[in-house]
Each structure stands twice: as C-alpha cells, then as structure tokens.
Image (cartoon, rainbow, N blue to C red):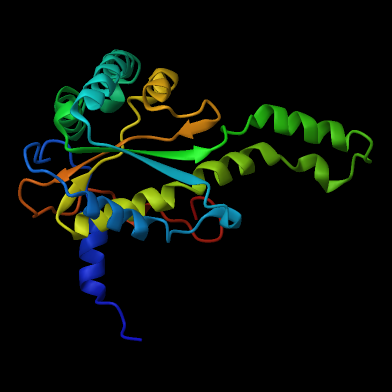
Length: 240
C-alpha cells in the first residue's frame, strides 16, 4: 500500500482550526458533502465497537433560528461567569481574540448553513453511583484486596465520551480536506431538553455538542500558537 504523504497529512492535522469568523454564511453546503464526511467520521475508533453515535443534521432556517436563540442565551450566561470567575486567566490577547470569535458565532449561528448535533445513545454515567456500587461490592473483601483502590466511575465516563469525540474530530478533518470549516460548541447543551423537544430527540439520548459547518472564507489556515509538546511531555514519571 502506498504510504501517506506525511507532509500533507501533517498540514491537514495542524491547520484544522476552530472556524467561527470565517464561515461563509451565504454559500450552501450540499447534502452529499455532509453524508460523505460523516461516512468518514464513523470509521473512527469506538469503545467495544458500540457505534452508539447518532448524527442530527439541521439545515431548516426556522429550526436553526430557534436553536440560535437558546445558544445566544446560554453564551451570555457563560460569558458573564467566565469573565467574572476566571478573568485573570483569560485576559490575554489570544483569549480576547478567541472571545471575539465566539461572540461572532453566537450572533450569526442561525445563518450557518448546517448545524450538526452528535449524539450518544444513553445518558452520561453517574460516576459517584458507580463508585458507590463498587465500594459496596468490595465491602466484604479483606482490606489488602487491590480492588479497594479501583474507581470504575471515571473509566465509564471516559468510555462514554471517548467513543464519540474521535468521530467528531474525523468529521472535522474530513470537512477541512474538502474546503469546509467547523468548530465544536457546547453552548446549546444547557438547553438540551428544550432543543431535544424541538428536534424530537428522546430524553435518553445525550447531545454531546454542536458543530456549525460551512465553506470557509479563504482556505489558508496556519498552525496555532501552541506551547511545544516537548515542554509538556514527561517520560516515565510526572515532570520528569
């Protein structure tokens, strides 16, 4: 099999950005593009081959308008909380630019051609209940039993979300390779039930996030300003 072009692969991986301000709000996105990129997405790894993802695609303007109302409301609450409680951490030039782009998205999301809501069948695990049940199960075991150190709750939570986010990222990469942009936003999630009722999503299904999708204004994106991985990678022991 022919090896991948590493340069092109790395260019795709390092220039797939969260696109908010450069989404083309006037250019329609063909249905076949969404279907094609989702077929790529579902090749992503999924825990125990559950494939328990579902994808809800919204293109109807009236429906997007109703979702946008909830999204903007949620953003206003979130903005006030973030800038009040974490202002010092976020008050940098890069953070301000990011905030400005989020504002643009919140105010224009109804005009984005396609909104995709990735869902998972089931509800997020109750980590405390899972751990409590495990402690009860271990209550008859001797103190030296290693099972007393086990916490299953965090693992179950990792499995739940870890089974959908690889597919979400693959979807975004597939979009980028075709000249489209996207971003992950969770701003509608506080209104999950009203949005679910609007879209007919059962209460037992989890809406993980929302992905606005559009062609981009220009296709040139550069790698982000990130700290070097070498500076934040440890070998064998923490901070070693």
